[in-house]
Length: 200
Image (cartoon, rainbow, N blue to C red):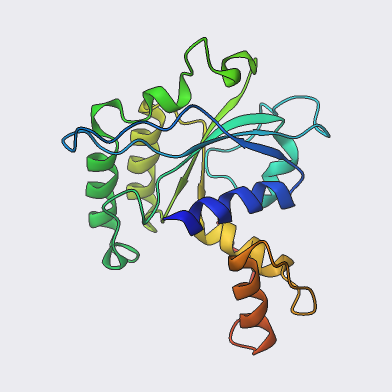
């Protein structure tokens, strides 16, 4: 889903990061293998190094402690995620187990020497996910699954949308970013209010 890619890219850019696509697109010649995930390389020149005190569940306020990373998107468009999973912790557990089998993230987070991001030095391995369970036990289970897949931190699509909505300005339309225009229109017509800060 191209709009998800644009949202993630805009999210990091609007929070001070330089962003570019990492790796190289893979041909989907074999449908048996899970589709490769979009991965972005991010770099924040204003931060000296990645902080060592970050939690696993990340929020926008944590970005000011991140210097560089590889960010993969497990989204609505490149996975089996459905609307019914948003409020069903058991389905979410099955979803993560299924989507991350066969070391799906290995190539995303272990760039080969010929790729530019292999020279990034120390970087965080971040994953954007559509949703996380609400139950504390089940969220711990999901975090264990993600950590086994070498993920250093996780962000949700909801957090990204909330941040971009908070930053949107109905008086300023950016013709190059269609999703930005949509967020501005939603605010202009009062179909979307300022999001409440998510508490964890």
